[in-house]
Image 1: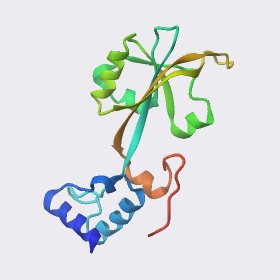
Image 2: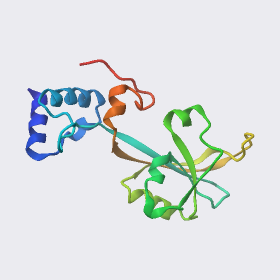
Image 3: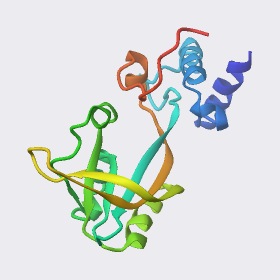
Length: 185
């Protein structure tokens, strides 16, 4: 009964109005099953199943004694923007750590030396500043043989809510790190 209210609202408006429940992976999975029961399966016409919303993070950082700005984020976050090609260059020696590989995080060097310009770029894409960490120790790998630079710097943590694609949710592949798919409720 409670889930049918969401399906009915979708059939009336064409939008899944989940509010805060949109970030609950288990709720969205159960709602997908309910929607399929009522014939909303995403395979015909404009009908689509609800997808959960998850937080996507970007870290903008800078060594204290350097004007260069770096960005750690999902590769597609920067690559999906054809209007602003060349604003960020991929750091070819980063991404080799297990956590980077698990989260698909890449490191980019910003071509701008203005923190305001880099922050504005992400703000225009729906990111908002969550935390500022000053005087944190940062490590940056600078060569293929593992040489790195360590130093104190500032980190700016930004986030936005984004849709989590259904095929990955159903197969369990692509489940956000640190989470597990639960069985039926």
